[in-house]
Figure 1: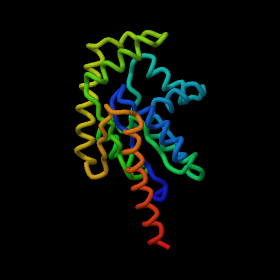
Figure 2: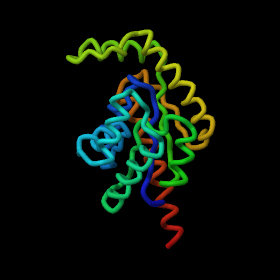
Figure 3: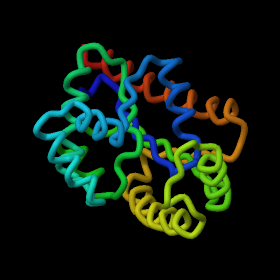
Figure 4: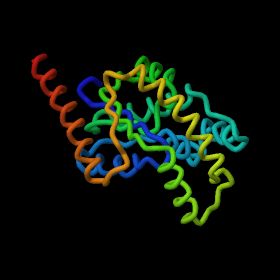
Amino acid sequence: MSEIPIIWILGGPGCGKGTQCAKIVEKYGFTHLSSGDLLRNEVASGSDKGRKLQEIMSTGGLVSNDEVLSLLNDAITRSKGVSKGFLIDGYPREKNQGVEFEIRVAPADLALYFECSEDTMVQRIMARAAASAVKREDDNEKTIRARLQTFRQNTNAILELYDAKTLTINAERDVDDIFLEVIQAIDCVLKKKQQKAAAQC
C-alpha cells in the first residue's frame, strides 16, 4: 500500500470538499471513497450486512466504527491494483477512528482540512436545503449549528493528533484558488513517494 497515496479529506458540511474531491479525481484519477456512500451502497445491495445496517440507520442509530472501517478496507482492497490513490472523504470523524484506520488499513500520507467559518457553512447548508426538493427536518439553523459544534470539537482533536500531516486550507475562497493549493499539496506527496520508491530500488 505504501506506494499508493492515501489522503483524508476533512471539513464540515457545506465547506465545499465534495467539489474539491471531484476536481482531484478528474486531475489525478484517484479513487474517491465516502463512508456515507459506502454505507448506502451496502444497504442498496440487499446483502445480509446491508440489511443489518439498514436496521441501525432507520432507527437513527450510529453504525459502529468497526463496520465503517470494514467497508472502507474492503473498498480499498478491491481497488488496490488499479487505483492511483485514495481520497477518504468524511473520515475519520474522531481521532480514535484515525488511529484505527492507520492500524488496520494503512497510514494516511496527508490530511486536507477545508476550513470554513460556522456562519458560512450554515448559510451554504440552508441555501442547499432551500433549493432541495426533499425537505429534511434537521435542516434548521439551530440543529445545523449543534451539528457543526460537535464536528468542530471532534475535528480539533484530529488536527491536534495529526498536525504533522495536515494541511489546513481556507475554503472561503474561489474554487480554483483552493484547488491550486490542493494540487501543490498532492504533488508534494507524489514526489516524496516517487523518491522513496527510487531509493528502494
